[in-house]
Length: 208
Image (cartoon, rainbow, N blue to C red; front, side, top):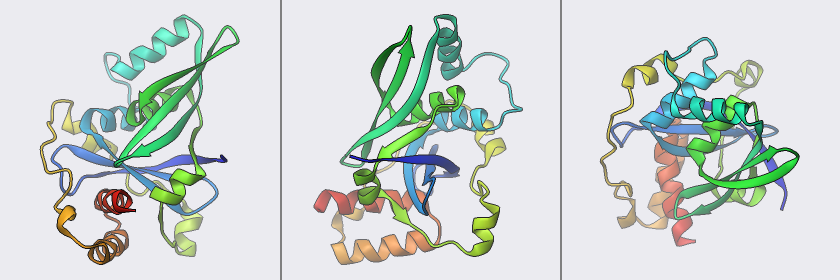
């Protein structure tokens, strides 16, 4: 199976889950986006890694892991999002120490937070992107700018680490027909509501 390299396009607030965020990954050589719902702490950690000038007074969990790995000459070579089951993405961290490669299972949000700190590339399989990716058409102006238009670092950092996520993860989509779901997906994509689009996409995938 062929791998597709991804980059972080941005982080946006969840429209339905209090304290949740949608992490938007974009294929490097294409226009498809892969939205992944993550928690507030992981969003904060990723935002800090993206905003190079922000240094927390004490190491966050992912910073601590980086310091620990540096001390024992452990390097993260790449992160692979390798599986999608019932709307949940599974990832592997490919690490290396003393020329020995290890594969470590990890939550996708943690794996990406660490990949940023190690400057490691992020990949997924083409089959996963074909199944879960959302294709958007950009104007020439959007392509020329290529900016991370949905990263809201300051707002995320102000949220803190203690917000609890409490909402119906299905969003009520279980009661909809496939035709209704596809219409809702088109509407969510048009409005750039990636978190909603991800949930609808997952519900459609379950029925495929």
